[in-house]
Length: 248
Ligand code: ADP
Image (cartoon, rainbow, N blue to C red; front, side, top):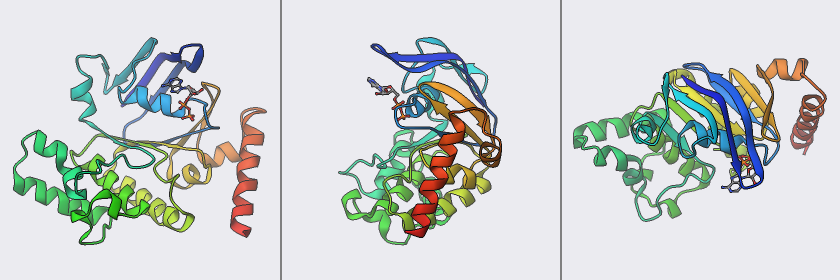
């Protein structure tokens, strides 16, 4: 569904992503994980055409992404960022329906889709009329998710969607996300720095370091069979953090 073929990206002297090969199959949930600054967001932005690679190419459904087709291809992808990225001057409903209105959807179709999404994300009634400043972090992320899903995307890209939430809300939303992904059968790419998240949610985990992929595996294989001397301590440190969080 999505593919990097020798794609690399630098910013000045910083190589954010070395030439990378990666295939993300249809309907699979893939997590990108690794320490801060290892290139996760850069990889995600290459996938949705917010950035173009310096070398190599990025393909969506077999088609190479270029400046001329990127707008059309991006409408087939939903994108959720850490703080939600909602427009502060628009109500939640207007944020969600902005693109559909721009594309000329009829209001009955828009209302029906809004209802479906509110059920899917278990949004509390009444929140759609609120402005982003009147929503909690968890509510804002449900609205961002609804916005990303509005046009029924084939691919959903999420950049640390739960990172800014407190642990209780995070675990609620994590459960909901898992159920939503399974139900939609969308191709999902989820950036996270917390190993517990992909082990719970993802079919496959891509572990990165310093702009390179170190290992691609299922979450449990990553833990039971770390590929090298970077993966092993990374997994151990994550498990230690997890156990201190649990006991605290
Ligand atoms: P991660 O998402 O894993 O934290 P990023 O992909 O954001 O990592 O960043 C990878 C590297 O590229 C970092 O060293 C970061 O400072 C650098 N970088 C990312 N975006 C930019 C940018 N727009 N301008 C300059 N440097 C950037």
